[in-house]
Image (cartoon, rainbow, N blue to C red; front, top):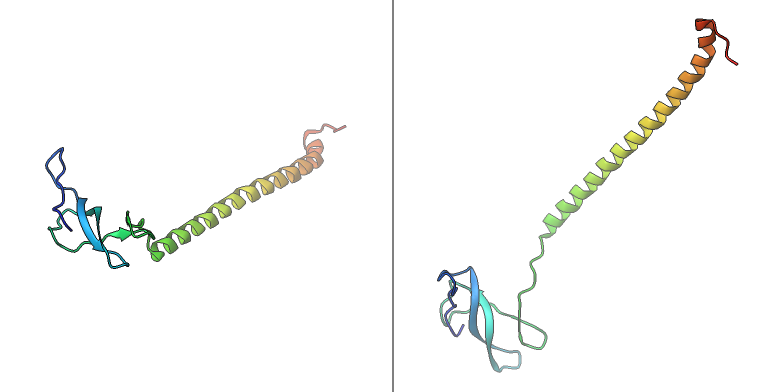
Length: 123
C-alpha cells in the first residue's frame, strides 16, 4: 500500500475498509498503481490483498458465497418445508373428500330411514 487509508471526511471516524493508493507487480513483471479498498487498520507500505481482472487491472473482490454447509442446510429446510406443505394440503383435500362421501352416505341412509321415522312418504 502506497498511502495511508483515508479517514471518513464526514465524521472523522474510520470505517472497516477504506480507499488507498496501492502498488502491485503484474504477471508481466511491471509495477502498477491504483486506488483500491483496503482494511482501515492497514499501515503505509503494508502488504494488502488486491483483486485484479483478467486484463490485470484493479477490480472489486468476488462476492462472498455462503458455505456449502449453509447451502445444504437451506436446501434441506426448504425440502422439509415442501414435504410438510404437501402433507398438510393432502390432509385437507382427503378430509374434504371423506366428509363429502360421509355426507352422501348419510343422506342416502336418511332418505331410507326418515319416512319410517317421521311417518311421511317421500315422492
